Image (cartoon, rainbow, N blue to C red; front, side, top):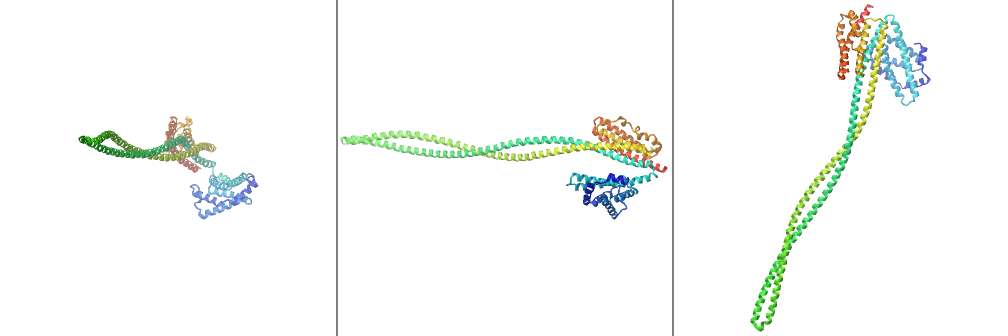
Length: 570
């Protein structure tokens, strides 16, 4: 590309130059180069380029590249750096570093540059961001353009000594490798998509279960709150019952003491009544003796005659008083006897009352003990219900957090499912584009055995992708794809031209069995899918992939020998 065109296409504006100048002062080029060489000196495809380089040589390369980039970032020395880029491209071409490897390396450089750029753009406006990103992109494109110019010149030189078929073969080989990678990526993405769908369904189920669990925990929590209130009320009632029973016990004790005291006094009164009876008896005896003495006195007065008349009157009065006394004592004795009997009845009743009071005391004591047990149990239930209530509050909070997290997981699962589907579509589209590229290139060159084998490999990869696509995405498959192994391009070549070119080749003879097997497996997988036996269909696809590796490996051997034969004939 001429210098004037490059300047016009990739020239930087004044603002881009100013923004780039500020960024270049913060740029850590050495860290970028350290990452570059740490990665590419150990990769299997690029490590051979550094095999004869010592650590000091690597550091020397870093110094040169750092100098090149400083010149490229500086407006005054940029033209010199771009001319140097052409020389670098020429050296890469001579050493066999392909444009693919060169661009792959540059992608790592670009990634590191943009990462540093983004970090430096945290606090600047959108205009300056756009200016810096534009400046870096233009510089990189300029550097790449001038470097690749050498590859074009090198290709122009080598085309005189190598046929265009060789170039097409290399491109097709790379395209087939890319196609294999994209096919693997497509199948992996489809499996990932299926897993994402399964995960999405599981997450939906889990989310619903969590919602239900949260509602259940909330209901249990409400019921527990009511139970806790009831337990507290029971506890209060039990405490009050205990207090009442304790008061009743004290009252029964007072009653018992009063009854005992009354009984004791009744006994004393009974004893006093008996003593009164004794005194009455003595008075009765005295009255009787007095009456007897009065009678004797009257008799003696009668004997005395006139002299004893006065004494007889007195004796008669004494007798009358004695009789009245005797009668009075009899009445008193009768009254006292009735009183004593009443007192004895009272004593008997009080003893019965005392027995009842003792029984009441025992019952009150039992009631008190039972109420104390009820109170203790009520306290225990209240404490346990309190602990349960606290635990359920924590469980309720945890359930809400889990519910919120499950919604977040569900959203991420949906995004993952969508991304998996998009990735699968992109890999499918890329596979189709690569397949079309291989076909177009193959038709533009001579169709020798090597190119036919390459096309067969490409067709085989396309066939396998379509089988997988139909099963995993539930599509209808063209029945022509389910024909046996003799109808596809590889089969037609195998049983015609292939027999004459490679009939005695060991890899060619081995090819027939896995090729036939893979077609049978593909048909079986699709039939299982049509019968809704999806898991078995997916398992069979794994067998298809294993057989496909065998087919591709044998075709690679045949392709390599076909190319060697073509070069030897040339």
